[in-house]
Image 1: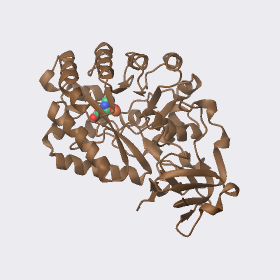
Image 2: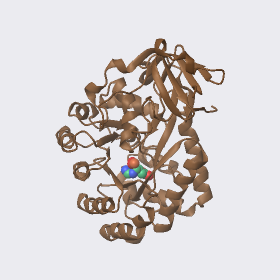
Image 3: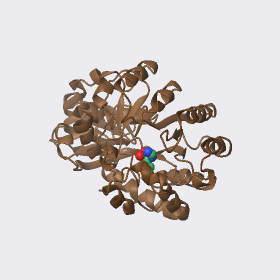
Image 4: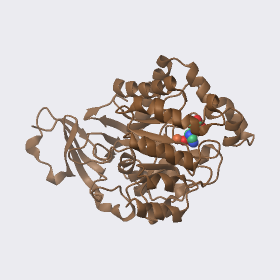
Length: 420
Ligand code: NIG
Ligand code: FE
């Protein structure tokens, strides 16, 4: 079969391919040979079939039916993978912004019945149609930033019916447009008012009455391990039960305190450990060893910025300790109302010490690993989905440099050019 799409004469082709088999990229795996000057990507229907320098292009596969994009002077790279979002929610929390500016802390706002609980009220009050409209709107926004796969968590229902609706909405939204959605159940976000003071009872309820309905529907189960949310012990019991029911695991941990949640979840074989601002380099080294570099630390640099917390995960030291990192926005109405993954990438360089190449791997291949999609997306390799970005910049060094800009000129998903 001939090529259906050819992106040719790419100024700089960032394939992100060629890393170690069976593991995310870390540190020294990122050598510059993965950048091909004057390269091409060829696709057949929705899949990539060949990638390389122009002088190796097989011209016999280029026919009158091949759509051709000329990418001279442009960086071409894999579609972004957004591996941690709270996509589906009602309302917003603009009303709490002023409280935050006046110095009120995130956990204090939550303890007063606001924060996550305020979004829970707005979400319970919204219709499924409204929640779907909102999710579709946000997915369209992600797509404009070049995001081609999104992980979406539930967690603003905190009762059976609403939580199941949130997971359902994420699925429907994924089917109604091109950006792919991977679903995570975060019913264990905080303790709902109905279970106030009884976190263990609430987790038992989730494990017995809700998780069984999500088998084969949500891929991951996540929990917020933090003061004011769930203890490390409760989280361990809940995650172990979720694993026994067949779910892969994630955790929100070490965001505001060091409670040992990341190490606990890694010991259970969690696919990702997320936030990690208070994770020490020593614990990171133990996790890297324990998991043989399989568990990915998902770093969320826009969250400390938005929460006015000057503590950022020591990403440089994590990588040096052998712990692979991904970067995400954590898009949600409370701690990061931004979908700008490019800004998060720049912030990871500025505040967490990542190199531009490490940061690029962190929003593509390593992010795919963080949501179990490493065989499908995250790099430009034959066999993977043809999710490709053409950027307005000529070299990758300019990507983190143009702070807050969107460098995306063209988005291709599944071999199809998207409208802007
Ligand atoms: O990842 N930390 C807990 N959960 C979300 C924020 C949710 C919210 O504030 O609405 C997070 O930051
Ligand atoms: Fe989160």
